[in-house]
Image (cartoon, rainbow, N blue to C red):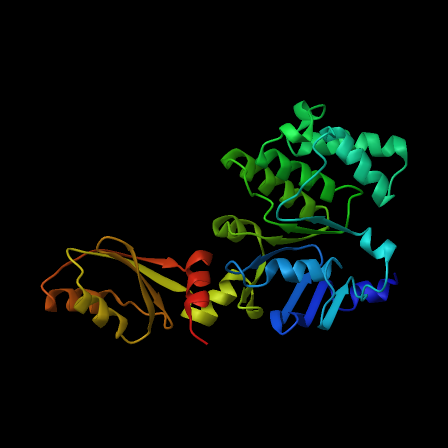
Length: 320
């Protein structure tokens, strides 16, 4: 690979106008994705939005119908062995032969990748099992692994050979809170080393903590891409108010939605709502006034930055 191809766009992965159809049924029909080199990029969307289909097209596990895919500036052609060695992949549901031990899985897949000699592979396998918290289970048959342990093992396999790009589909699936934190710290270390991670996950708070940019899919197409702050400003001015009322009936709820600059009002819990704004101004006097008009009281109201979860829900709920 030439250095110019790798540095001209600054992208480790670029997907343009991707289409994948299953006969007359479109799986994805307009996916655009740009993952900068040395970044941790979130890939979000509700179930069935096309995330896994897109990832499988990138990995060559599915043949795209149309569109363009470039990895480090090159479009994978044929086997593209050297290019594929630069990519590590964790599928959503990793599965390995039950009879193999954890250590044997890494040695087997390492030999298949062909990136290390036998001695170096043994050293790296031991190191990776320790990194993902499976050092004590390395001689245990995979068939006796829990779901979370299978995920950890899959992450270790994806990291074999220190690939420049990691594509991870739900890497915290089945993990307990400690395991989630372990994966978070591990991925931050990977990015600090100059490598790139594409992270597909339903754990929105984790994505917000880890990722510098996110891409959101809905119904097979990209609906937005950018940093969390950029998306917040683009959608709601980046502001949300959490308001608690003495009582909150449907009439008051309807009037809250009519306030100038209010994009969306969602119920958080009984008599508590999140109010997403398209304009950044102090809406609290209007809330207090409406509450009194409806025989209620505004008990508390706090201004916050819009979270990724709130932005995500607003995006996927919007009608086309």
